Amino acid sequence: MENSREKLAGTFVCDPRPDSYDLDLLLSSYNYELPPELIADRPAFKRDESRLLVYKMSDQSITHTTFKDLPQFLPKESLLLLNQTKVFACRLFGKKESGGKAELFFLSLETRLDGAYPCLIKCSGKKKEGDLFFVGGEENPVEVRLLEKTEEGDFWVTLSSPLNDVLENFGKIPIPPYIRKGESDSKDQKDYQTVFAKDSGSVAAPTAGLHFTDEVFQKLDQRSIERAFVTLHVGRGTFAPVKEENLKNHKMHTETYYFNEENRERVIRAQEQGKKIFCVGTTSLRALESAIDEKGSLSVEPGRMYTTDIFLHPGVDVQSVDGLITNFHLPESTLLMLVSSLIGREKTLELYREAVRLGYRFFSYGDAMLILRN
Image (cartoon, rainbow, N blue to C red; front, side, top):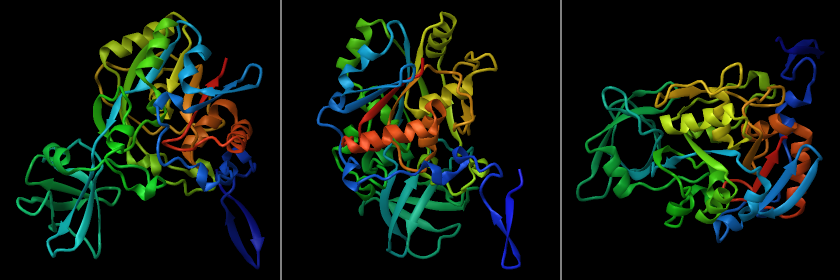
C-alpha cells in the first residue's frame, strides 16, 4: 500500500500513516503512561505471590487476585502450553588485544558448519575481521577471533575453547536493559529462569512462566489441567524497538521453535477432544499460532526445528488459543500489539491504565494478566 502524501511548502512529504488512518496500525496508538516506580527490578518474594489481573471477555469482568489462584480461573480439563526454553549465560566480559575493555554477547548456541557463533561485541573503536579478544580471566584467557559480519551487522566468531565451558565458568545471565540497567547478579541466575526451564538457547526469559511454582502445578493437576511444552528460543529481537509508525511496514524478528513427540501429541489430542487451550506467554502463542494449519490443527513434525516471524496485532485473526497468560509489556512493543490482537487495542490500554492505577508491577519481573477469550 502506498503512503498517503500531503502538499507542504511546495514539496511532497511522505506520511507514514496508513491511508485509512486505522489507529490499530499506528505505532503511536500503543503508547501509555507508566510511572518508573512500577517497573519491577526484582520478582515477587515468592513467584506465585505476584498479582494477577483476570479479564473475562464474555462479560467484560475484571478480577484482581494473586497468581497462586490462577488454577481456579481456568476450565477443568483444559491444556496449558508453556515454553520450556532456558536462558543461557550469554554475556562475557574481557578485553581487546590492545588491552581495552570489551563485552561479548553471544546471540545463539547454534553454530555454523565451521563452528562459528553469532556474537554482539561492545568495545571502544572499530572492529574488523581478524581482530582478537580475550575472555575468561588473566591466567589462561580464551581467545575469541572475529570472522565476517552477520546479516544483522554483528560478527561470527570462533573460540579457542568450547563455548559451553566458557559460558558455564565465566558467563553472566542477561537481563533486560530496563532492569537495573541490564546488570545481573547472582540472584538473577535463579530468578530469571522458569522452574521448568529445560532447553538452553534463549537470551531472554519467557517471563509469563516465571510465576509458576510446584504448588501452582499441583493445583492445576487437581483440576485435571494438562500441561504441554514447546521450545522457542527467545532472541534479542524481542527487545528491538518498532521503528515504523505504519505497522504494515514493520519487519518482525525471526525465532526458532520445535515440539517434541510427546508434547506434539498432547496438543493434538487436546484439539481433537475440543479442550480449551491456554498459552503461557507470548512466545508460546507465537509458536502455536505459527504451527497450525488452515483448520487450526497443529501441523508440525516432532523434533523438527521451525522458524517464525509471525506478527500478531489487531486485524490478525488468532485461531489457536482460548486464552493467554502474560506479563504487562512495554509501550509500543510488538508484545503489547500481540495482546491487543486478542482483546483489541482499546481494551488492552484500558486494562493497562487500570493496572497502573492499582500499582501493578510491570515488565519481566512484574505481575501477570490472564485473558479468557471464551
